[in-house]
Length: 336
Image (cartoon, rainbow, N blue to C red; front, side, top):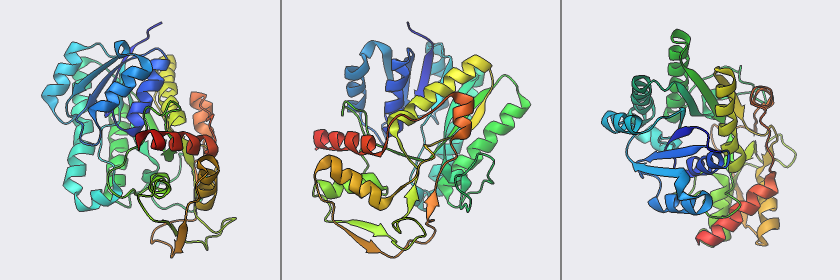
């Protein structure tokens, strides 16, 4: 049975493409808007093979373009929007702050205006654990103090505050704000996955490059943290679990007419060395690494308190670290 139609901005990116699959699997029709700045048209072809082109529509366009949005909303009757379209590199955000403000904050504002004009008031927003800044208490609850330590985090925090302001003054709106922790892995079909440009900034894509011989070794920053093996611990979540969280968010908005702000993580931490060992186990490849001094700003542990997502959305993760590494290794082999 086909349910509502959803607009997915940035829907050909890493998390967006996996969410498109989860939405179609849940019975939604999906219209993807993407400017292809950090994605490829081939991803849409792969999605069509996975879930059927009859459930998907692709429109090339930019979320900051009001005319494009007006046309998209006039051509389709949407139940709601899942908003991914944004720039997402912390380092790049420091070098190009105006671009990040224009796209991440300006794009959201342009989208909200188009939604209001079309009388579409349900939005699931892709936020980030970066809104928590530097924390000392773990796992991190949604009530933790927020702060921005970089421009990317500032755009996410400012976007959350925009939505809070709009929602508190206009009860037509329902906002599902999802604060992601560390998504990794790929769809189990190996048809879609993460394809970062340049030298990866995140752990698993970096391990991928070492495993395939593109890079000689992994650099582990710090082995003297107060953790069981001395390396940093993070809350990794399988990208398909994360994708299914967006379905749960839309379901909750439809059922209650109310918004929510929740962490999307597992509440389970894995160290750098644990990730390396799991990857070696599923790939059969030894990952050479060397230890370097800690990086400024890195913390020993960064974990989500996943309680509220379970209580409000009925959301629980299904996949463990080995599933994350196994699916990612299958994707890397197919993509090589």
